[in-house]
Length: 446
Image 1 (cartoon, rainbow, N blue to C red):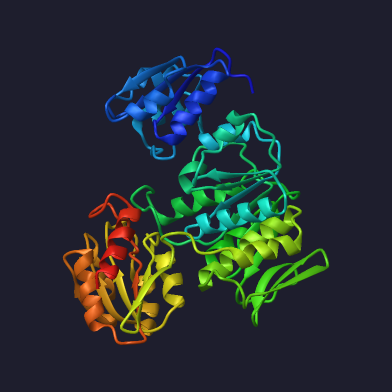
Image 2 (image 1 turned 180 degrees about the vertical axis):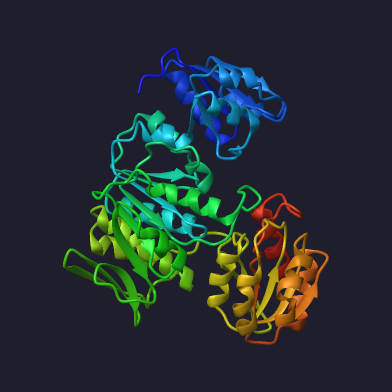
């Protein structure tokens, strides 16, 4: 792709936008960056662009600049219905996402992972497997480094592993992973999308440009995923905790079995450190992607045996008076909490935070069956109590620290206190990491 002397607008100056602006300027494009924040708020980002000839339009989005551009690159945080984008699209301006731009410069196998939950864990496991197999591997996308940094680095890579969000898929045209995985689907980001189907449609775009030569690794146990998988052009490779598969990867009686083209590999799970039913699915998805892309079974299994939980995903904090405390601050939607609840019995669940617009009703069966006490915090507490309060002993807490104290008082020995919010953190905390640390500190103070 030749972008010399083209007028290219980069919308949004977070990490991705900065990397795109740098890359395009280095390719000889006439780059303009636009962001609603001011120079003070963007001091760090602007410093990174210091050595490049880039025009800045700050504290505004100038409609004329959008319309005069040959191409617009949109950062993931920018909504599709931004009026200036809508006008530019109507005028026929090419609008793409950062992963689309990066994909045009990628010529090695790409494994792309999406889904409502488990993306980061699966991506990290898969990256570790490739590296243990001796491949020079780039791991990034929605975690770590933007994909465009791979193109900018001029290094030679053997494999690329990318976590991909629905936001990143909104403006793709030719982005084509060799292997694409869809882990699960549950309501999320309804503050961004007009309805659940629009969110699902965005996720499914990961398969849009694949052919029968590529693979789609999909969750056989998720009815929505499996329903939509039937229309894909790529070769289907399902994973399942519940169904034995002739072609695919499945779990039964303590063994993960991989079957492909008449070949079979078996991996006993007893010694795997990564616990939880959701992680069994993440492990199967990562293993499928790795073996389909040429990894050796022995090195693959060695990596899985040694892998431990990532921070803020079902992380054990400590035991106090016979009660185990787990922190799951990354569980910002209902689907993620469902998986967490499947992993324990006799639970005191601390939940709540900033409401993202979805229904909490899908949690009702697990709350009835496994949650002895529900302690609610934050902006969403009222609606959560309305939808779930009748199914178990339910209480409100003013702060997360109060919630931990209440939970310690009411949870019997042998029980589990689980902070798995089903909401984002922005009503009370800077981000999910601060929420996690506050929970950990409160538990340690008991």
